[in-house]
Image 1 (cartoon, rainbow, N blue to C red):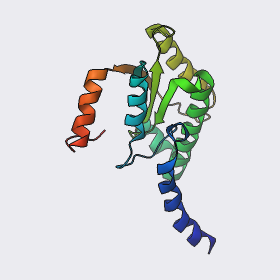
Image 2 (cartoon, one colour):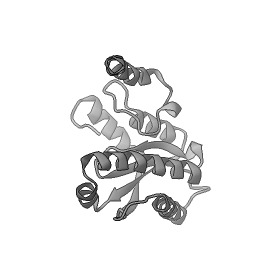
Image 3 (cartoon, helix red, strand yellow):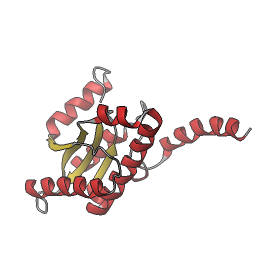
Image 4 (tube, rainbow, N blue to C red):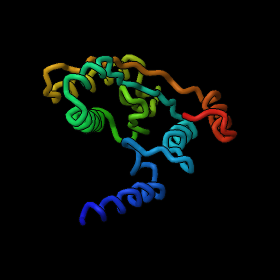
Length: 174
């Protein structure tokens, strides 16, 4: 009986996230047609004069991990992995640097962050990403360790506004 009510309440709780401010949905945000928290956060950072970097953590041996763990264990592993990365990211970066932590693609995580070039340089970003991976790996307790590639790129303001225009016209979807 309780499961019946939970099944009815869960979709409502997801829709209630629509009204939350951006800083409350910046960790693994749901993607909305009405509201895109990724575009909103990036746009806000660019308007504030920051540069925006899109960092990724790509798990190269995702398929091997899936086969080794089985479907249910792999789902639990992914949940734990997200929690671990989120905790490490929150520990290593200042909250105001983080725009979005997202699992947009099935084989990794994306971190979108504000970059203040008066304070941050390219080598510091590299070091932070490597440290996030090292710290996260310390908490993973499975036989086969994930092979994690990292990288990042900057969002250029002129191209971002073009992408937003295409999105509005329905020509592309991020």
